[in-house]
Image 1 (tube, rainbow, N blue to C red):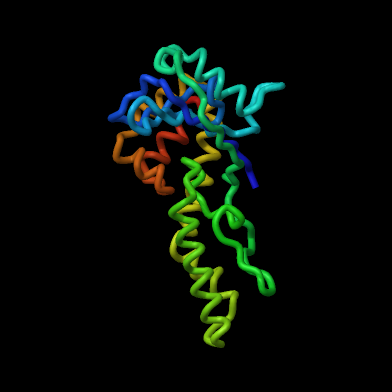
Image 2 (image 1 turned 135 degrees about the horizontal axis):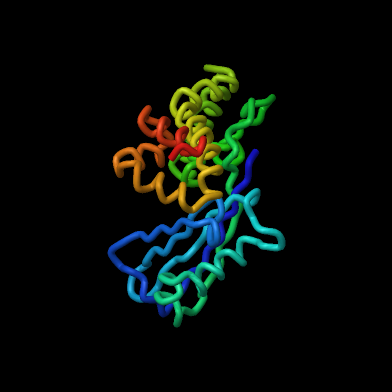
Length: 220
């Protein structure tokens, strides 16, 4: 599986915008991903990066990129210059897709263990809830003698398998664009908010596919 890393600080004494979720792109700060500043009310905020390790510069780690963004980015550094770190949250994000099988003998995989997340944004809570619910229901029916555990595979793939697979495909295309700030900026400007929302949900409308393919071949 492909792996991304999420690294976040909870901060006090920030000047974060209370009415907006701020997202930042750029290979110098967040290679293969994005950074965020999200107000938590008052003067507190969460600041973090979600990045693809394959695009790391030599001798750099996720914390290095977060602190570079926090202290050197022209906008972020101004908003966070007096910030104080309250806590640290980090983890790995499996953005490479699902394994061939998520059921074996008496074991079912759900959530991150099954690669059940949307690779374009790293979000996995809704998909993990669906996978966990289906696994629990299947386990209950299996114990009652109503089905085989193998039916879990069919159930979750029918509900969200296509979106997960499509998101991995889009993420691979975006990996190439994220190596160039010029092409990434052009993609963001070209793709409408409506289509951008579709991408974040693991969907690939034909106009978006044409745009990304064109940019990946350097025709943009």
